[in-house]
Image (cartoon, rainbow, N blue to C red; front, top):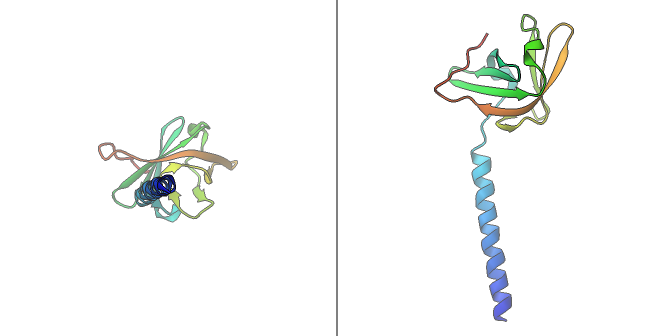
Length: 120
């Protein structure tokens, strides 16, 4: 009987820890919608800077050469969920150029406050 009680107590404690970690992860997610983007620029071959509103800057990472994108034509940012959140870029793509190309995003991160991203 004591072993059963100890097992239940251990499982209950583990469940409480797991739900606390999940809540912290969900509340720390930083998201925006593609229509909120006010500017783009190429940081380097695999990183693209985004300005969202007046004070939020993000960096999108792609495995493709971002310098190949023709930035003089319209650029579109698409997400399969409608929202773009920091972390894994699964489902996020940048579309643009002439001829039009699609660049899958592998990572979305918030730019450091000390290095704002200049929009173009």
